[in-house]
Length: 209
Length: 209
Image (cartoon, rainbow over all chains, first blue to last red; front, side):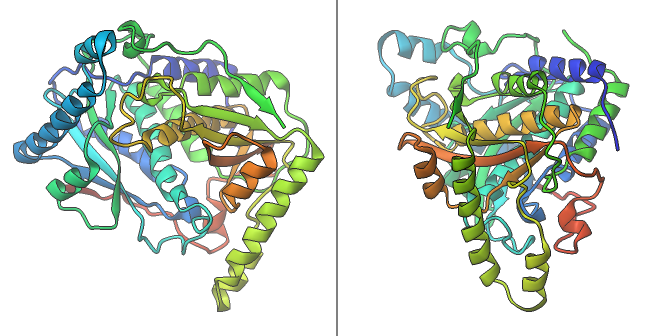
């Protein structure tokens, strides 16, 4: 049995506090050893029925990265047109992707057709497979931050278009588009809060039933 | 800027390795301070547009817990009937919930109607809100393990029935049913692997595009 000290827990809380959804990246390359260690978090992540449904695509060419960026740009322009007045101005001022600068970019999919795990736990809630993929991404995010790496999770994308551009199997579902790199700066405050878009809550409500 | 040492990373990997999806709980109560600290992980979790869409329901009465257990039981019997031969025997031998013993149980929902975050990032992929909730659960899971607490994520449930039994608003989606308590035993091996249901992979494939 492995016990953890209160010192470790305190440092782990620092990790949670210093984790940001990063949009401003340095272009410096990431040492391969660091990346490999971060991806080990996927292998150790929980998955429903041990189905391990995560599928990881590394965007390794300028061509596929340009297509992904164009996808983001089109969807971001569309999203901007849905806001008006002060909110539209605020939205336009936000930087919502770091896809031009982040040295490494990955599209993370869920293979909804996997037979691994023989469907255990996924018949009542088949979304559990996609939630397993998110659990892996969150573990990756935290270990990346412990390597001083920032992660930016971009969800302003047309998933169907990205699937076509990356030529992935039909039964894969896009879960996340991740930019990874060293951040330009560090902060304890989420950028959306610093820029006045939305505040983080001070309290967490738990409802009794 | 907060940097983390290789010693911390090594200990964090131990945390990932010793995290299990627990089904065998002691009935010992959990100190309120520990639980409160674990839930702080929700407040620090990432959420799309800072929407913080997580809604936490504590099952505090025998009545609601009995309903949740009956829900699991019905769905588990149904799942068992979908397997045959050796696999049915194996499935029947698995313990897939710890709902009779776990001292604390929570149903975690996503509020898909929240206006917090003004829809940022959730129009192209509205599932991003539910993924935010999963990110929070994963952070909670890890800090709970650092408190020597086990967590069991039960997905063999009829979500609609649970929503009715807990009388939650119509636009809340069930993301997870969590059992929390001190585990009967600790292991580096997932129970589904130990029981011969499925193996964990030794390698992680990354596909280049």
